[in-house]
Image 1 (tube, rainbow over the protein chains, first blue to last red):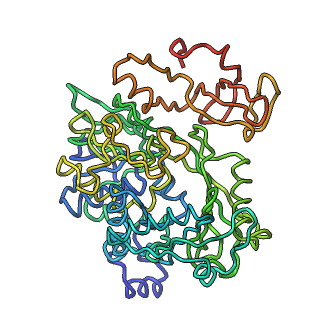
Image 2 (cartoon, helix red, strand yellow; image 1 turned 90 degrees about the vertical axis):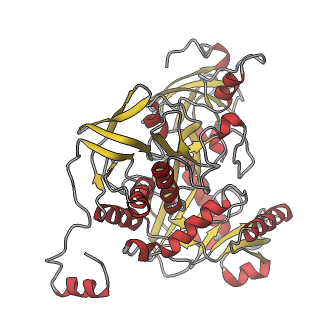
Image 3 (cartoon, rainbow over the protein chains, first blue to last red; image 1 turned 30 degrees about the vertical axis):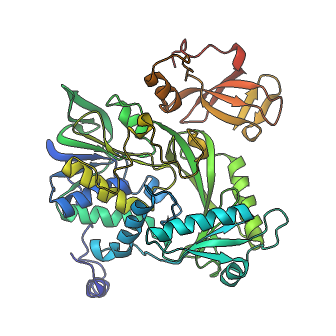
Length: 416
Length: 92
């Protein structure tokens, strides 16, 4: 069924008695043209674009839990394309453009809200770095505005401008950035892929990858063996674990990143504000809760929960930036597992096995990349060669000496 | 998470700085390029037991090797890095 104002009205007047599930729950077939491991945002988007852009519909997405249970439902929902490096910027800008047309494209309300993303700077050096980044963005045709202190004050007056340690000097604003309802992204892509014939198979954990004569034949799962012509891995958070089944050793460590939501309060923060010191980024959901996150816990972890020192650090950073937050109560906290790569940039590309493709290493920037990641991964699988936007994100860039190190920190996964 | 420093006793993890997997072995300067690539970039990233380097930067400043479960955050032991089994001889 196509969703529209008319269908909404018809459903409402009939008490939803004729509502149908948004996607099927199919039994796995013995063989598919393409199997995608991982029913997160990226896996579902990949299947969606395989079907829509390349006409490959005999596709299965295998998810060990239910869709939306992983990182696509655990992030702080921010979208932006304010990247410095020329390998990153066009890719993330493509993603932002896809976000802008996404709801019409997959006929699902993902509540894309371009409310503006503001990054604060707290020193002359940081302002220079933001000017450079803003210029790099504009050279790629991306919107960027460098605000001075007064410009920031007019936009977000509630910040602590005269903080003794971190006074606010200005900020880099991307007005087209914003937030998206993250669960709806998973549901919208699942529904869009399903309606084009893709099997979204939940509660189906991949236990092994069957390789014969150097070619992937299929995957061993908790629901039996499923054969395939091409296999795509999109299991970020657990990429090392899944890739090991194919004998791949990745330049990735898994780390836990925590996020938080406060009790609902009256409208206060009507855009996304990012603190320029430490790590703190906040927006306000439509329900009124403040959604915010911080930095990694910084040690290897596959546990979807973090520890208290980082909780304390995030709260301190938040109150330093917005003193009025001091009396807001935190409602919930959770963690997600990040694939942290050695250069802080993702991997989308081919592997040493001809019919095995890898989508991994999203660090903590995976959500905003969801549409472009799926778009490029589908292209890479269907055409057996990368799209020009993901050509630089190859796995062998580390061996060949071409890291894409946005932060300039070297091979230190927990610092990216 | 409490880490049992062999010199200071159980201390909160915020006093420590993390380096990473202790099973990574630095190759000799004459080693093949491939060995250096593996040392700098590739990680086992185990789901379960890991042996890893921490430094007690907010305490005795000693370099330590910790055995920990990456799924449960359970900490089994922590010994001075000097007396830990050298990497390469460990089956983790």
